[in-house]
Structures are given as C-alpha cells and as structure tokens.
Length: 108
Image 1 (cartoon, rainbow, N blue to C red):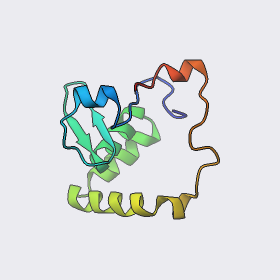
Image 2 (cartoon, helix red, strand yellow):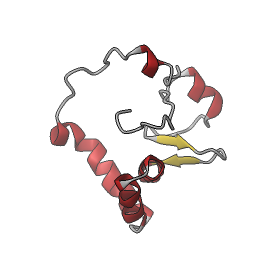
Image 3 (cartoon, rainbow, N blue to C red):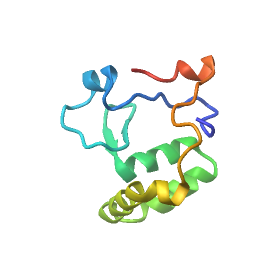
Image 4 (cartoon, rainbow, N blue to C red):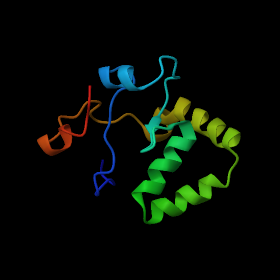
C-alpha cells in the first residue's frame, strides 16, 4: 500500500468471498495476482508482476529477478515465506485499522 501511489492494486484474502468466486478452488496458500487479462500468477511470479507495475526502481528489481529461473525463484520465495517472521520480526499490529480511503481497496 505504501508504495502503490498510483492505486494499481486491490486486495482480497484467499479465503474470502471474492477469491472463492474468481479463483480456482485448489490454490496453494500463497501470494496470488490476477493480471488484467485474467492470468493467475503465484509466488515469485506474483511478486515480479507487482514490482514491475510499481515502476521506478521496483521495475529494475523485477527485471533482475526475472532473469532467475522460476523454480529457483519459487524455492527462495518458499524459504523466505517460512522464516519471514524471524528475518523481519512480527508486525506491531497484525490487523491495523485502515483509513477510509484505503479500506475501499480491500475486498472480502
């Protein structure tokens, strides 16, 4: 949210109503991005898409990550996901109260 100044993204939990209507029933519990043309990107490919759309230096990071073969990227993604709390710590607030202008970007 902090870096999405052009309001490119909307968010929904994988267990929510929107996801149950729009996504296949058997998805792994992971990051999923639905592109404009309806493709579903998961794990590291989802992150690359997000970074690319954010533009600026994030786009350069996306291009660099895109040079790494997907199986290696996804392995790194799974390792990071498994130990992210040890690396980055726990957030101060797990479910912050969002200002109204940000709440409308989240679907149930």
